[in-house]
Length: 70
Image (cartoon, rainbow, N blue to C red; front, side, top):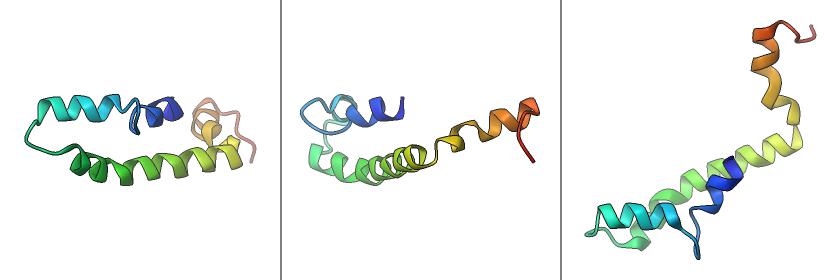
């Protein structure tokens, strides 16, 4: 889901940016892209971490269900 969301930011699709631009017409798209870039980079870091350490995604559910190893 995170990778799908990341795909909605950059051109040529850029659907999220186009939606924000349609709401705030006075803000140029370049400003919107500069604003979303740090969030996109943070999502990229998250995806890299999950790819390197897939067990991160299941730590909390394992802890809640009591199946985590000690």
